Length: 444
Image (cartoon, rainbow, N blue to C red; front, side, top):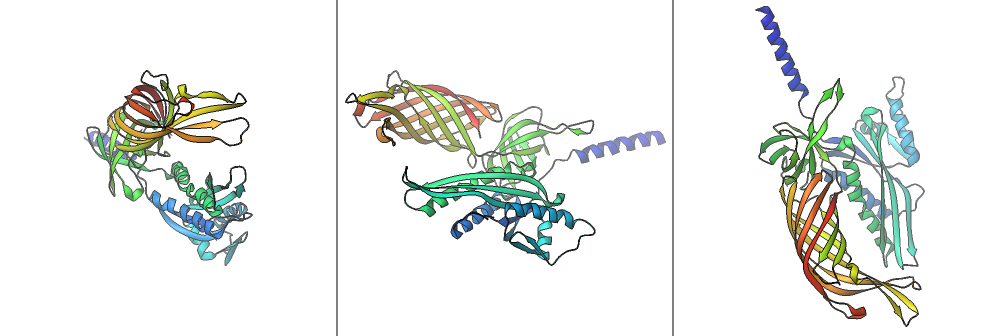
């Protein structure tokens, strides 16, 4: 009887231990302290500094997964190393706490230093390149900004967790400050992706319930989850004490509430159930298509290679896109007065939207778009190009796509396109007809 009880107790203990170790990892909000932008050695207008500080703070706020502590001091690149050394020394038993800490031109009181070291992560942005000038060749102001953002792990004695480099540029025809603001406005999307690509900041969550191919998962807008976000299904395993976890499925978010999100299972191997581990897949939020279309039987537009960018993050069923394509047969070379050679390259620019219906790896997406064509005319003796509108057009199509893996898909298009010539320069002609084609999608 005692042996039986012992065996039963051992089995119960093993089952309990397995249950405890198999619990999914759930992300929590993390405390971060964000320094103001360091810019030593660069002449940056004070308005621009305030704008950059605001944009950086807003990125971390919009991500939702952080509790933010703002810091008014600005560090240079050299100050970061000094700060890390001081944090490490402060953990030693013989360290004497001063009333003030000096890092380059910045000062921290004892209270400010203790508050920073109590944060989980310290973020230090520093401008490493700033160039704003007037481009006399293109007759416009141009600005380029390069910012290094260091992430320091205070739980690991201030060790460097990651450094992300953000490079942006902007231009304006008449106003230099507007060109600077244009460069600043490009910082948020790059920085948000950079932060989400750091493993320590990626969201880990779990399935709450499942019904067919629809799952409900823990977390929502409170942690910055958006429509179109993708989560990998994680199959946890260990071999001889080493982690052998792997991705075994893909889920895309289609609805978001404050604390719960709804996802569509695109593919999986094995079964899903309550508490299945999910992990965020960081993406820029754009899908890039390379395609080749054939339009009707007209020689003017028969072969049309193209490039399309579709917004995916923040969208699920309806998604907007822009596209550019070249009707190859309209490309021409001319001799004007038998002296000046002209090279003419036609480009169709389109803007439209699609409505995606996902059925596992397969998807069907009707779409519509309108656009305009222009001819880019270049000569070897001219430093600038001459562009003029040549056509207006419409496109209606249905796309059938198959997801190859989490990062790519192949597709076939069938539809109708019509491009009407609005000028007769260089013999422009209208073309239209049934459009068929195929292509490849990269999920960025």
